[in-house]
Structure formats: structure tokens, C-alpha cells
Image (cartoon, rainbow, N blue to C red):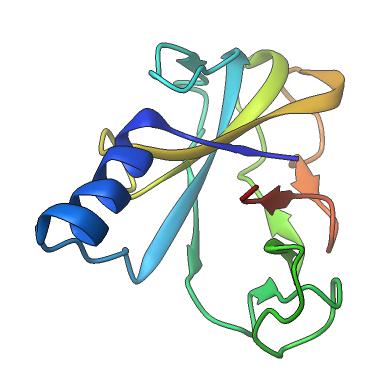
Length: 146
């Protein structure tokens, strides 16, 4: 399960209690990390070798509701969980990317703000010439605890 960043938590608090406007991005960008993120950021993202974050539009078709991967209904019940509905595929590596230990969800294709992050259950080494790394439907999951 993923965790939300300090940046996002502060934006939500400011919007809910302090009347400060905040708009969630229309597209989020999934990135691969070789050093784990924390709520404050600070992880190390893959760079070079044809690497790029993967854009995923914020839409029911792309992010499942609480019913699980393949559903296109809004969240219901009390689990506050979402997961990817489709396969998220990165470019094929044109250099060694290192050992991927986690993912970050950002609000921009480059730089930007970390919104959510998660560690991989099993780290994966990605080398030049390997197949394009991907996440099957339902492999990326986030839950907001109340």
C-alpha cells in the first residue's frame, strides 16, 4: 500500500481548514525509485537510459474504485483504496537503471511534487536491454487511512 506525501497532506489540510485552494492534477506521473522516498521526499529516481515517468490520467477508467482492478466505479464503502486499472509500462531501458525499490506518484512529468509513494514488495534490477518494466492491473495500490 502506498503512502501520501507531506506535500499532499499539507495541501489537503490547507484546503479543508484554511480555505486555501488546491486542485488535484488531471494527470499523475508514475516514477521508479532506486532509493526509497519518504513522506518528506528525498528518494532517488531513475534517470537516463531512455527513462521517463509514465503519465496516467486521473479517471475512473485508469484507477479502480474499492471494488478492485478492472472496475470503473467511484470508491464506495470505507476502504478508501484505489489501484491501477490498466498496465503501466515504462520505456525499455537503454542503460542500466539499477535496482528499483519503489515508486513515486508525481504531479508533473519531470520535477514537480511527490504526491504518493510506495515500496515494491520485491525489488527489481533493471539493466540495459531488459524488457520494458511494467505494473499489471491492480499491482499499484493506494489506501488513505482515516
